[in-house]
Amino acid sequence: QKEVEQNSGPLSVPEGAIASLNCTYSDRGSQSFFWYRQYSGKSPELIMSIYSNGDKEDGRFTAQLNKASQYVSLLIRDSQPSDSATYLCAVRRGGNSWGKLQFGAGTQVVVTP
Amino acid sequence: GAVVSQHPSRVICKSGTSVKIECRSLDFQATTMFWYRQFPKQSLMLMATSNEGSKATYEQGVEKDKFLINHASLTLSTLTVTSAHPEDSSFYICSARGSAGGPHEQYFGPGTRLTVT
Image 1 (cartoon, rainbow over the protein chains, first blue to last red):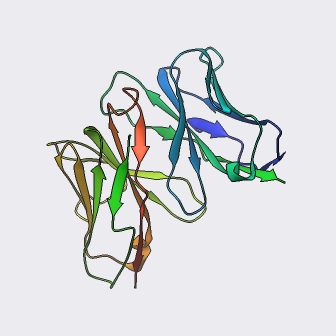
Image 2: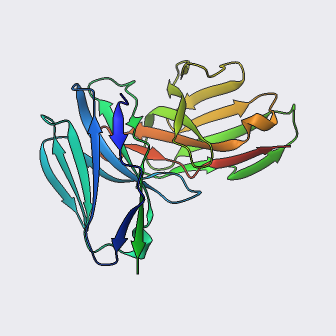
């Protein structure tokens, strides 16, 4: 079992619709959760971080965390063609300054005009 | 804020030569820096982790004598690919973690595309 799992996609979303991305993780000790966006040929860009259960909103993005279910999701509202990218879910155990991120393989999102 | 730079952005070198890549955190102190490699259409692969002033910790299968990492200060880390071969051609990305945003947030540099001929 992979430590962090995501559907690879592609997830095709009409412009203006909501894109819903899911991520599950296996390590119950995980305490820090992140979503990165990576455009083709570019490096990852941090778009959301979440540390406690519930929802966290930032602009058109909402991250949702449920530690009991070991599940973290990302919603992109009013999707735009510029949102077309690969979205990486990353998870880390907290409390350890050497702790490294465990990445999912990423979900490719394609927003169609 | 939270800007990480890398230099060079692109480099072509001949087989057998060495290449140094610099990674700098521009507006925060990076207590920990990471080096990743990514091949086309594949996931990020962590190569090593380093804390300022300490030796890097390499991931299994990564040759520490081939990929030399120096984390000389809280804003600078370097990766030197020694005796490069064509199979070392890849996208190398550094990442830094400090107190720029939240205490656990990690930011990536723009990457260096290495081509070994």
